[in-house]
Image 1 (cartoon, rainbow, N blue to C red):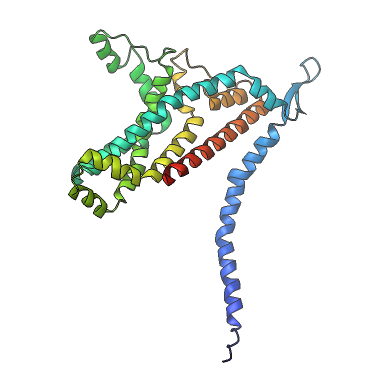
Image 2 (image 1 turned 60 degrees about the horizontal axis):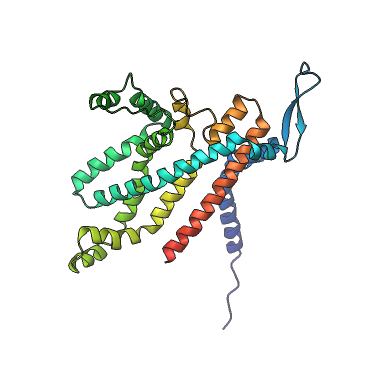
Amino acid sequence: MTVPAPSPARPAAGRAQRRAAAAYLVPFFVLFTLVMVAPIGYAVWTSLFAERSSGLGFGGTESVFVGLGNYADALGDAALRASFVHVIGYVAVYIPLMTCAALLLALLLDSTVARARRLFQLALFLPYTVPTVIAAIIWVYLYSPSLSPVMDWFDSVGLSVDFFSAPLAIPSVVNIVTWHYVGYNMVILYAALQAIPRETLEAATMDGAGAIRTALQIKVPHIRSALVLSLLFTCVGAIQLFNEPYMLTTQSEAINRDWSPVMFVHKAAFVDHQPGLASAAAILIALTAGALSYAVTKLGNRWKAA
């Protein structure tokens, strides 16, 4: 049996498909290069230089190649190390609170009637639609003793609470961020809960499992991937903490201009006019976020495989 020779039209069709695929991919790679690769490359290049005053300081400044000197200065800066300590304390409170609150709300929504479900889902997601700066301003107002009705209520019951004090600095930031992002994480987990086969839940109910047992032994194990994804987003967002503590600096002496790592970068670049130090610190923050993302992904994969 003879095999028919390939049609001359097939190679031409293959080339046309490759050209079409390239036409779709080229804009993505161009934008990716301009938005991601080029800024990272520029930050790495800037981190290798430092601004030095010439002469006695009357001749302006010039960029001097210092190699890894800015990285050494950043790692040796007590303010940057303190900012990472603040974020570690923030993460220790924020991540368990956020994860548990989002999971609990998603489970509650999954068990309510359809009409109430839509209403509460909208109400819980609504804070996420508020820009983070506006959300921080709202909470600064609610924290202010002379303005806030909440503080007036505390005073009426004999409680003296200073949300701008050093002991409450981290809880104050955690409260703002949790209020803003819990609805977003809840939607991720709720969508995963909706993907659980109804037959699985009905079988658990027929076996005599109650609502709590079904939630803990059936629903939660089925949404492990969504929990890991939510945890990953939360960890990366924690490293990038900026807007909320920055707005609190207007009222709180305990939260200074370099309270978080990103605030340190902002201060080094725009207040101290040290772009090389700011770029080096930004690269270190990016490496930390990458290492944290890798660790969370590996732990999540082990948990999903267990």
